[in-house]
Image (spheres, rainbow, N blue to C red):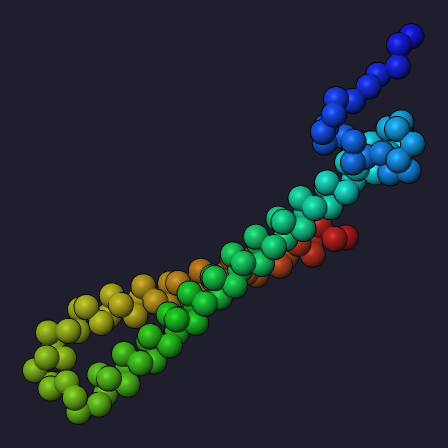
Length: 119
């Protein structure tokens, strides 16, 4: 049976750990595990970035509600304008609270799922 050869510049050339010119099954398996670890690291990094952005969005929603409330209660806006803004403000508060609630709910579900996978 003829010995298999890798083409020059092949990605599998890096699998030859001991540099003897022979890529064994053990070396290929080690390379595959290394690539799997790299993929898992990239996935974890993406998940971290996603969670960080969701956290920023929830905090922005909370602080915008606080700031809006402070502006409304201040003497800057006359009472006549508040009556006109009432429906807009109620919709704003419901939407912002929905963002915060969704973040908390999905974070809890995600934590439960990840802890169940670890068991």
